[in-house]
Amino acid sequence: MSLPRFRTFSIAVVIAFSILVLTACTAKWEEVHLASLSADERTLTVDLVLRPPNAEGEFCQRVTNTEVSETPSQVIIGIQVDDNCRSWPWENEYHQDIGKLYPVKLELQAPLAGRDLINKGTRQRVNITRPADNP
Image (cartoon, rainbow, N blue to C red; front, side):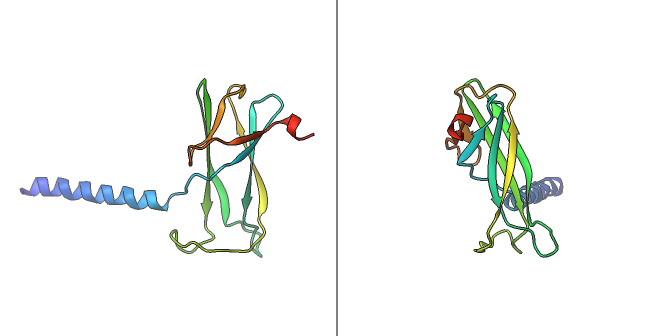
């Protein structure tokens, strides 16, 4: 292998490894199972349970990204939460802290009007509560 080809190959390997590491450390799409729909069917509200703030009032979890993708037959929603509560991304700590409800509002360009609501992370259907369901 000549030097220019080796250099190109080495750069490609470094870039591929960097992408792999960055992908592993980014926030995952939250599992959303239930969303509330506004009366005009243009706003969805998802209640996430986030960890309460620490003694200094700082939150270790926060919503970093939301996404809404609409087609004539479905609406795909996604919410990403950054979790700095763990020391390492691969740790799976269990905490008994009571969380705090954090409502996330998602605006639609058009009313939901019978379209399927899909979770981006799981590709599963999301249940919807409507104003008539909650008097």
